[in-house]
Length: 263
Image 1 (cartoon, rainbow, N blue to C red):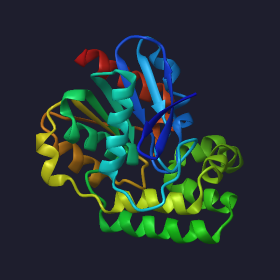
Image 2 (cartoon, rainbow, N blue to C red):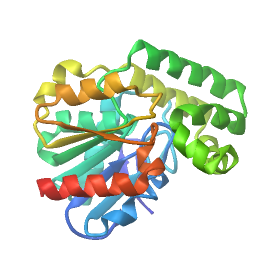
Image 3 (spheres, one colour):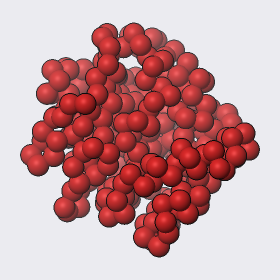
């Protein structure tokens, strides 16, 4: 593990392999280990994973911030690694960060893969986020994870693995982030609306959405894809909000095909 410094933040990150760089950006509550089912499938690329501020081994914030601030963190990390241009893959909040990075520094982004994400938070998702903030303070990590699984995973994987096995995966992720840090990340997401700016994203873009996603519903994902010129929209079946985990083989093959098409 190595660190890169931006002001008071030292972002924990890993770099593996050689080849065209791919930057993986995690969603809310998730650290860089969330890409464990994916990174090995891209062995012919240079793979960069990192912990966003307020999660994992990166420092905790002491005041509110924006998704754009988190995108600046990612840009600084690329600077320090000497990477001039990278494919960028972002999940959920990480997809919002990826969009911001493409808006902030388009010359640094070779392509975008946006997974289970959005250009803005609608009333449904805003209400869901407020409920998460409240219940996370009231419940144990295990009880919160049990409730959140129904939104973070689709019915197919719950049916396939069972709740107990899924809890063994999700509970440590929940427990690894403090309640206040979780709330700060959610607040940053809630405040964001980039619909008016999507037309200025000019890099090849793939938007992926799981057909069982009850967190980011179809309308938000399709709105994002429709707003980015030339973006490709693809549905991953039998997956909820986390197709990178729920349908890892399909996800990996789909993303590899896309990256090869824009190489």
